Image 1: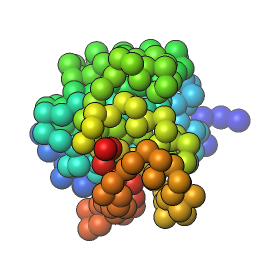
Image 2: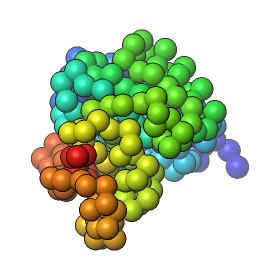
Image 3: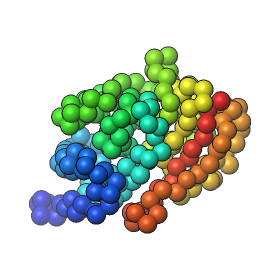
Image 4: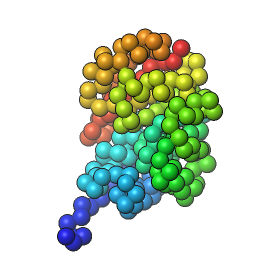
Amino acid sequence: MTDSFAPELEREPGAAVTLFGDRVDLARSFTDQLARRGEELGLIGPLELPRLWTRHILNSALLAPLLEERGRVADVGSGAGLPGLVLAIARPDVQFTLIEPMERRTDWLSSEAERLGLDNVTVLRGRAEDVADEVVVDQVTARAVSALSKLIPLVVPLVRSGGQLVLMKGARVDEEIEKARKVILRKRLTDVEVLELGTGVVEETTRVFRATVD
């Protein structure tokens, strides 16, 4: 098979400038590097290039307005940097701790943060439960990590009292919430809600599970 059948990178949507503003050049640089090296490093699948901007970069950036001003955020299971590195680009006022257990991925996250000059990023290798004693943040994010019933107990210990879970979810988030009812009660989460982000801005909106940690 030849490279002539390789998918091409999606053209930058107009919404990129809307979401990143004067930081859009950094977003472009990150997207280009992820397109070049993502499959090789096992960060993205071979068919993701035609939708890399829409489904991954802009999808992650939609979360940026929900983050507290000058806050501290932990991104659990950062992987390729989605949403962690994207949010660090969009919100330079926020301090991010990217938590990822795989060495190959933490190497990527660290190298990209350095290459892009993101001094608001710290990378920790480990699982959320391994770093709970050293991480206390205002908000936790996660994308495509696991179902809420499993994810909530892992991330709640990272958040200060009064902080928030801001977890990116798919179309079946309401079903996940129903299955996680006992966990939500046991972990004393309040103000539980589902937000749909991006309407009128991007083609593919995203859903977010947001709750306050008592």
